[in-house]
Length: 145
Image 1: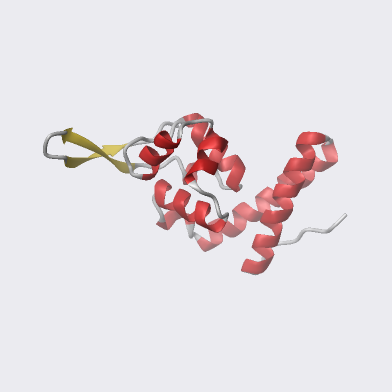
Image 2: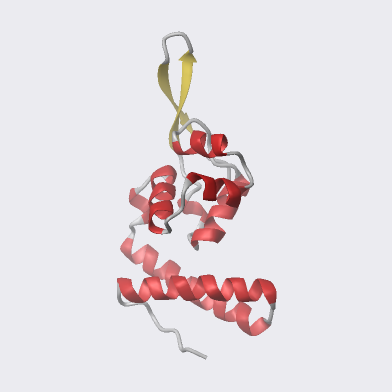
């Protein structure tokens, strides 16, 4: 089995992310303590790299989601399928009209191998206050913890 060490480059980071996704899928099909320990180790190494490079803290949860979707070549319909929601619901999330639920945060965190708190931060939602003139006003929303 491959030995995993501290991540020192972006290339190594993405390789570990890919390995983690493969191992997670393998674990779902054939769980074992050895695989579980390896998944936890790689996850810690990835989280350590994320914290050191603080790229996730610069983006609000929706910006982060859009970036991850782009990086993973995901379309809105793919996200709708992952979250088991309608395409309209995904559109509302991506357009700051609906917040991220606890379940959605868990699913996104698991799929993209990102800590839940990256998605569980405050960001503004926009509500249409007067449908006749289409004025939208920002409303501060805090996602659930």
